Length: 503
Image 1: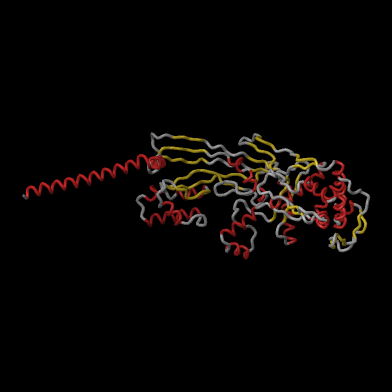
Image 2: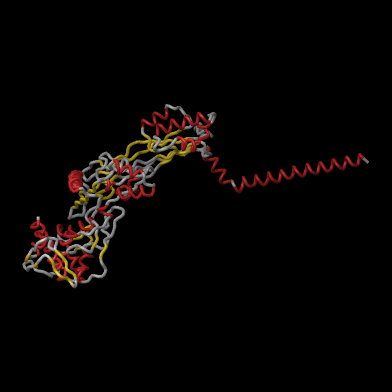
């Protein structure tokens, strides 16, 4: 009886054991299926990444010169620091890892990366991590003194502006990855950047190169360089005058734009105060009180402040032109023969339009004057009458012909359009005649007034004169581009005479 019982018990144990082993085999088979089929691509990619060192070879960013070859922006050599967590953390205690991270943070700069952030990077599961970019040769030497085998470097370039805040809004700046952030650096980023190369080699798990491994090297193609239309000497004098005006009149901002009326080349483009593109995220020229206030701003407000500092108001900001717009009114009236050069316009200091009384800027009265003297006196009543002679329909047509209400096409990011009243009644027509009730950009006004100097042609303003390759060979040039003919050569000549008389 007991013998039969024992036999039955053994059979049960065998069956249970067999069932358990079968179950484990089934689970193992399912797991292997998942690994081989479902997760195959991911695991293959992970294996390849562990056995491959793929180093980016950074292309040298093209330089930026003034029209005469003066270097305004160039690229100097810098280094990127990488870490292999598996190698760095091997055989290290927590205290030793903390010490290493503290030493790295001190060399790189604690304002750029903190020790705890480096420790977090080196404690992860990634095969290779980027610790810091744009390191100098001196920083590279200090890090090498640590003799840490898990740290690697790649050589790259760092943007450098030798004249610091000179023409800063024109040039713009680049971000930490060397990509154009603002200005010409952004507008021509693709041309300046070139194409990065790659160096691929087989390694072991620690990142050491295999003797019999394969190696692929794809050379980088350096970026093209730009020659601007800016003349360094003219730009310098404009910046000095802008600084003097800023200090004398305690202005919030001073802007100067100088353009060749014949071909649209911008010879000087000055905004004061500027900023240092070498350190574009640090506000310049702040008092101690202003600096303290800036530091208290949150990240969003700081970004807004920096964006205002970087922007080029000559291109991006609109304003009411006032008396400078009277040249447009005068040119349109002469072209349309709405006035003669000899007839007189009366200024009594104020005048009525519809139910409104409008005033001249002058406290007294200009009396009777022809159009030449009206321009010289910048007389509001005279130009209200001249605008009336032209008429709302024709005047609006000439406003559009002079380029207002449309973009100039200047090769610079963020150009704004002008704002023009849609409904022009008697009062709006009068104020428009002396430059009120319309909002334009400085580059639009410069482009429009250039017609007086070049015989009546609207030309496209531009900042870049030409593009050259790494060997200095010309790739492309940007010459005069005429948009349309607006006023006759005769009207242009008369207006130049009027402007000379005013001076």
